[in-house]
Image 1 (cartoon, rainbow, N blue to C red):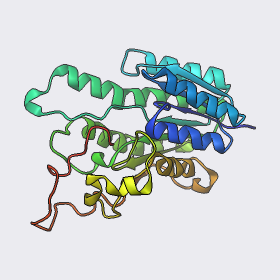
Image 2: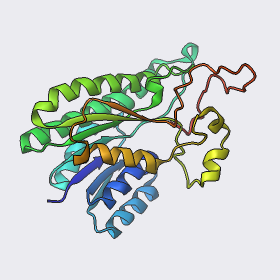
Image 3: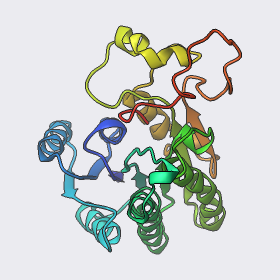
Image 4: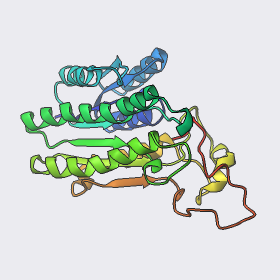
Length: 267
């Protein structure tokens, strides 16, 4: 039987890399996009050229009932759901003195609440259908390493890491595994050569000396939902080139960019 996967935020960046690799591995795919229709259409064409069924939906997942409705639609279109990948989100930096209630609500609803509700719908379907499926949250090393102006995004990623452990315990009896993949600084826009990944100024702060790629995050995600990882659940697997290992820079002469603050277009 063909396997299926639903990827939120699948039209670009890490989500797109995951959808592409799972398609290559024989999965039929459903995914959401937020605003770039042309990116969603190009991914659908690519997956259909692989011989895969593919469905996509515009979804503002922070809005009331959208996460539940779009997950139900994906299950209906695919016919079953084996893998739920929650990847949609918005990187944000928030200065506490400028923080608004709207900022808090938006990041919470998109980066945490939608993950829980998609997981709920997916797990309910898997249990009712007798599917020993997989749920994966794409989080971030910012859920482990503190940065200035990061109480919301980093805080929500930390909450997902912790929630994953409880969900893994709850769903283990049904054979459903729940894990997190936590990327570090990842080049999520465009196509990057090895020279560009190493030449980025932020790469100097990474022990392996370069940014990561969506394809690498996709590889780890695909492994986690495979039979080879059948004994792994409730874990957070970092993929950051050693980014958060050093802690405070030990070399007083080293140039550190505002306590490793990441540019907005990197996770």
